[in-house]
Image (tube, rainbow, N blue to C red; front, side, top):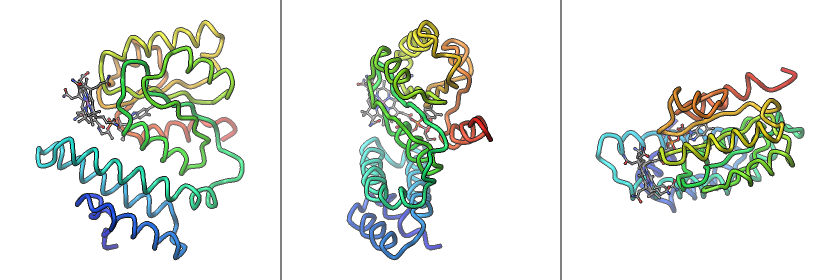
Length: 210
Ligand code: B12
């Protein structure tokens, strides 16, 4: 495979990337394969960022292209996913934190595996998360964090889930670049990772009835 699409993301060429996504989807190519190549592009962008060759602007621009590709592919993905969702996941970046690139990647990967994702967005109040969990009755709840100052809000939300009698009905995940096993213990979560694919594997392994 040429990885032409991945490289279009890396080169921040939005027109070329979207044209490739459109033409390949319309030709009937598996949308999951197209998405995987976009992810490859994001991985390279991440590596260049880590190496200091790319700056924040490149990270944000490539993230925007990735989001546009996902939005375009959503109807194609809907056709290849199982009619009955595998399970439900509520995701949020909690109060005080506005980072969402990692959470959005996780959301797409979960949807691609057949999970129904309720993404509450960023800077989400603990009460809103608890209310949604009550309403949706998910099997999984995921908090994404990129700044350490949001840790107390994660703990507070977990505590509110306990008080609402909901905590033992869900598997609670924490993820994001600044998270650690110590945070998992502090929050009282079941799982922690800095890798979205590990989060997806965790959900797949813990889906009821499997
Ligand atoms: C991009 C970025 C921004 C963007 C965010 C854009 C957006 N829409 O998200 C902007 C410019 C807005 C921004 C703002 C700020 N930022 Co910023 N930002 C970053 C940066 C460069 C990259 C983060 C990122 O997106 N990484 C890429 C994604 C894909 O990785 P990821 O989130 O870890 O996600 C992966 C996994 O962790 C996993 N995952 C993520 N979430 C979850 C959840 C679950 C449940 C699971 C299972 C998995 C999972 O999936 C992803 C794929 O594998 C980091 C530096 C760095 N190198 O990390 C700083 C960084 C996170 N930012 C930082 C700071 C301080 C800020 C600001 C406060 C800056 C300021 N002074 O104004 C503000 C935040 C304001 C706020 N209240 O939130 C600090 C945090 C320091 C700390 N330890 O707390 C960092 C570490 C930079 C630094 N070294 O100082 N930022």
